Image 1: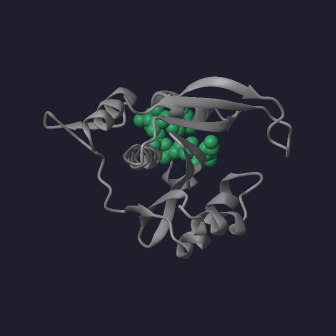
Image 2: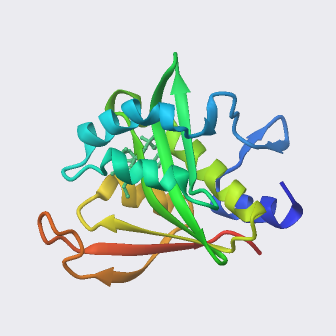
Length: 174
Ligand SMILES: CC(C)(COP(=O)(O)OP(=O)(O)OC[C@H]1O[C@@H](n2cnc3c(N)ncnc32)[C@H](O)[C@@H]1OP(=O)(O)O)[C@@H](O)C(=O)NCCC(=O)NCCS
C-alpha cells in the first residue's frame, strides 16, 4: 500500500488499528475469484437477489481482458462473499457485492471493500462508484460508513420492480 492509498483508507475507515499500528485487515482467505468459484457465487446470487446475475455474466467478466476485479472470501472451501467491479480510467465501478446470509454482520463486506479498493488504487483509481437499490438500507448504511455518499438518482433503474437506484461515490485516493 503506498502513502496516498493508506491516507485514503484512513479517511474511509477501512483500516484497523492494532497495537498502535495501522494494519490492513487479514486476507488469508481472501483471493481473486476464479471460474471454479461460480457454483458457490451463483448460489449466493440466488439466495440474495430477486434478479440474480447469470453464470454467463460472471464467466464473461472473469474472461475479460484486462480482467474484471473480482474477489471472494472463502471458508472451508466455499465462497461466503464476493465483490466484483470494473476499472474504467480512474474509476472503480462496483457492480456487485454480497455476503451469504449466515455470515452477514461479521465484517466480510468490509474486508472485500477494503481489498477491492486497495487493488483498484494500485491500478491508478481515484474514485469508487456504485448503484444501490433505494430500499436497500443495509447496503446503503455499509457504503456510507466507509465514505461513500449519494450523488445521483437513476429513476426506475431496476427493471424487475421499477425501483430507483442511488448512485454513490467515494474519493479513494488523495
Ligand atoms: C450489504 C452486505 C454486502 C453487507 O455485508 P456484511 O458482510 O454483512 O457487512 P459487514 O459485516 O462488513 O458490515 C460492516 C458495517 O457496515 C454496516 N452494515 C452492514 N450491513 C448493515 C445492515 N444490514 N444494516 C445496517 N448497517 C449495516 C455496519 O456499520 C457494519 O458494521 P457493524 O456490523 O459493526 O455494525 C450484505 O448484507 C449483503 O450481501 N446483502 C444482500 C446483497 C446486497 O444487498 N448487496 C449489495 C448490493 S449494492
